[in-house]
Image 1 (cartoon, helix red, strand yellow):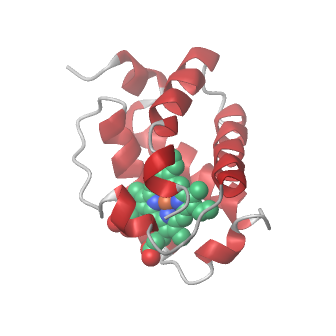
Image 2: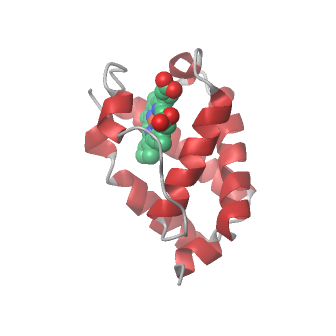
Image 3: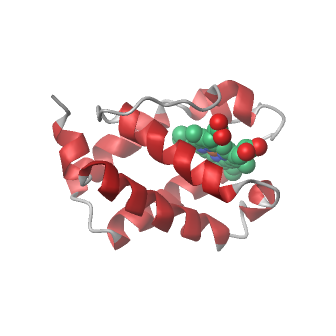
Length: 119
Ligand code: HEM
């Protein structure tokens, strides 16, 4: 059975929509956009949606690259990581994700901090 958090995010369709809004927020954020200049955005959207779906207990299997591997060489700073988190918060507010679900998703993603920052 899929998790309550997955349900609260609107299942796969809700997560896809949330990640679309997130990608648009990133695209308008001059603090981080440089990193995404040469990225295949369609793949990024698909992979981040799949990853989030799996992480929140949905019936998805993340098929993308390992988090450390994919972010290695980007020299992502703590400020940039925080900027991405801020974009996600804005996207969750825009999509009216319940506050408890927002906090749970942020806590899950915060665990990747060490895999992504300073690599
Ligand atoms: C919790 C935080 C983060 C998560 C969960 C995350 C997750 C992901 C995922 C799932 C992918 C797709 C991997 C694939 O295509 O196989 C990806 C790619 C990418 N991420 Fe992150 N990411 C995070 C933070 C960041 C930050 C802070 C930055 C930069 C400011 C960043 C920059 C990128 C870029 C540029 C790519 C595309 C790499 C490429 O296609 O060559 N990520 N990330």
